[in-house]
Image (cartoon, rainbow over all chains, first blue to last red; front, side):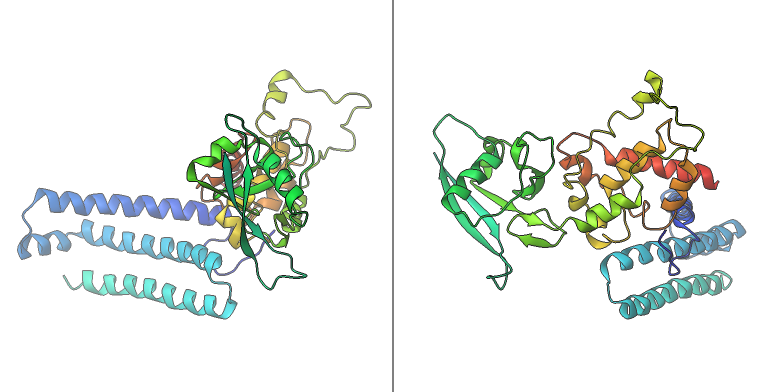
Amino acid sequence: MVKVAGTFGRSGVHDYILLRASALILLAYTLYLVGFVASSDITYATWSGFFSLTMTKVFSLFALIAMLVHAWIGLWQVLTDYVKCTKLRGALQFLLTSVAFIYVLSGFVILWGV
Amino acid sequence: MNVNFSIYRYNPDVDNKPYMQDASLDVPEGSDMMVLDALILLKEKDATLSFRRSCREGVCGSDGVNINGKNGLACITPLSDVLSKGKIVIRPLPGLPVIRDLVIDMAQFYTQYEKIKPYLITDASKPPAGEFKQSPEERKHLDGLYECILCACCSTSCPSFWWNPEKFIGPAGLLAAYRFLIDSRDSATEERLSNLDDAFSVFRCHGIMNCVSVCPKGLNPTKAIGKIKSMLLQRAI
């Protein structure tokens, strides 16, 4: 069996489930946003009102966390395919996963500022 | 009719790097032959051209090559099928080290095959002294799996195998793995699944189905891999 430490899940199965579950959450969130955009005129007031809903805040954070998990696993898979130098791969993984973390934290701060 | 070929040539004892060599062959109008026949005729002209072949009827799996960018067995690919592009480009199967010309080193491929223990494992008490019988239904599960001839056309067309040939089992190995996982006579299902339960061995398959499109025996490794993934999932959830 191949041992790995760089990805988010604890095993291949765990990664597989998390990838698909996070993809479903992201799909649902996309539909939620598209539904809002399609059903109302976009003004500052409606946009701000939409994002002040607890539902939207929680769903946005949930989607951001799903994005973090999805990106962590997905990027690890892409990097282990294409970047063969371990130091470079480690550095890229650190950098890109950090960016994903920063998105989540930024989202948290921004949403609670609305 | 003059048929033009462009053939990958590399003899590490003489050449600094591989090159493509043009060759042509006169094929009587209205007749056809297999790509392997053409290679054999070309070898008569230039005896240094190297390739593997044995049964010349798609059973042994020796002459897997890349013809016009698609992997296949030279012995069962008619020239007329690949002529449409004008020139027939023949390269070794991609992704594995080239020993010479169209001959590749298949050690990595066989190492992955070995990993899945391609033989029946049974409890010491279980195997009968005589025939080891299966019902027709149990036997039916092996159809579409046992026919693999290990030509490596599938695994060498798989990007996941190109990038991680030492960790990802590859479509051929996984097809064989499922063949033993589903065999009613095999009692090592748990042990086999445990050996596959990591992030690379099975889960590097992203289902792009190159393996299905090139398999000269018309088998479906992607489907078998999907079944293995389901077995691993059922065990984990």
